[in-house]
Image (cartoon, rainbow, N blue to C red; front, side, top):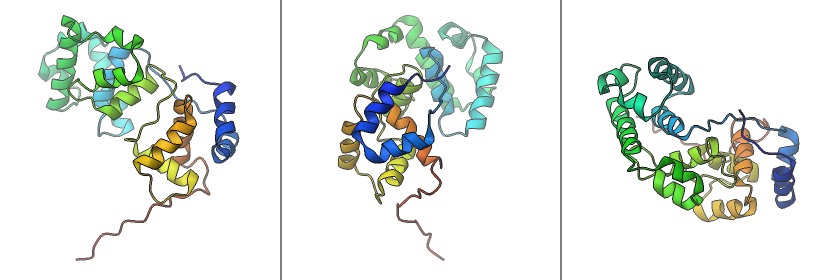
Length: 216
């Protein structure tokens, strides 16, 4: 299943930003997969932190093979050592078991997130151990499909902005200018900024100053 968007969003963004309009026309539709199971998506995001995409896929398959359906009951049915055996660090196992325990006992009402504002979703999710603002924002995009999310904490988003608008750096003030321009279709703008950062428009290089290591 892919994140849903269409002409309404792209035409709006094109009307708001000439450079982004050209990028949208050249890149075309961007397909990004989503997972609408919010509990499983939180577990997946915690597992995925600071490891490669290939490693994420391997660990997730191992976990799914071990528990079947990834839910609070299936996670809590395994001990910490069993969860670690799929390749996770002890700290991530702690975070995941803590999350599952809170959902199981009702301390964290996961289904209530769907009715919350963006700000309240971020506040609620980032209250969990192992979940920061960036992780919450990624869950809002790739699970909840919230329409207006652009993450200042995402390095690829900032890189895409630098490349598209030819800035050497993107500070918070400059970021907010673009975020407001994209609203209320920020999520779709994010898809194109990620694509640009990933090389979808090969002639666009990153204007950020190169970092040189000191010679001993």
